[in-house]
Length: 408
Image 1 (cartoon, rainbow, N blue to C red):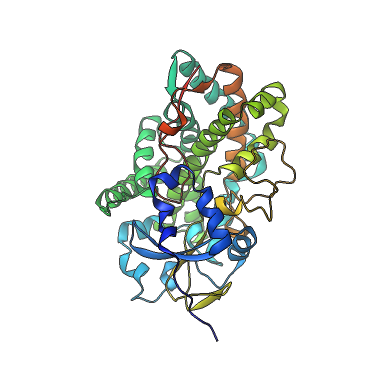
Image 2 (cartoon, one colour):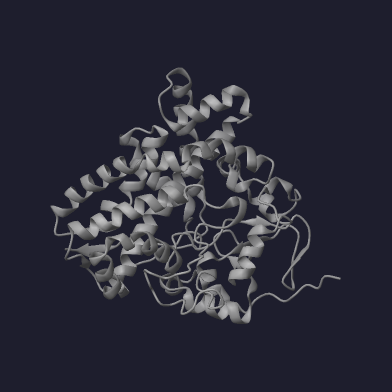
């Protein structure tokens, strides 16, 4: 017989506090010890959410097919179903919010764009964009590294893949930032407005590609739909939303957090400068140490389910903290040590199982090109403010800074 356990101590609500956002690791260490599967309340949506913080438990959750990613499988009267609005529901018709067999069908279709060969073929273009951006950066004495470099690189790459005009690319940052980080004051109006703008923009662009096909991913997805792969317009828009959000948010914060980690550990920075061949293992450690995605997206309990002694009630949300799991001392010796040669390093920064991040090879490629070129071109790179002055983004889904002011 399943037994309902008590909710967490109120102190774990500090997960969303601005001071915690700068460094959530001490709180996650307490969670792993005191409440490894704990119920808190998301202050954005005022909904309960269960957080899993141990590595082995996180992997187990990501393999557990009892939980669903498909909100439509929840009872009509459940809170997540009641709070859903048409705009966000349309944007969420993608593979990250689907179970097999829909997930399998959607992932198979889009995975053609992210084969190792196609990603590797992007290397010259990623290098050229990186060098052009660094030419602009070098002319200044100091910049916000995120807005001047870490953001425009991946958004240009993914927008070029999709066939989005250059003049429209800045708008995506505004939309996706709002959607990924809703305001803490609970006013969801701006989020819904951004979602609607995104939806209308891509519906229009898809119509243009139907009448004027191009050699881009958007045309390929539209063509696949017409060839009978059963992709609806909503699924297409949801897929594009996922590709844009995941395609630039992940790399922006991988580069930003990675450079921040190097600047905090000058001995590791010097090690990488002297031996750029270490970049691949360095990127893996950056992903583990301060990965760009702090938690998984939601899974729901379609009925009361027991998970590690806790009953997850029907309709409630459960997530794994990838950042907490990647600092579990049971899996990583001295997890707080940043070591660019760490081996083995079986982190789960890109998730695990059937929902493992499809764009991981592209994010790794972009970071492995961008960071060595940055260090080579800016040998005097340093933080332009005290570390205490850095502001970290609200919310627990994306882990990254609002700005990263640097001088050189």
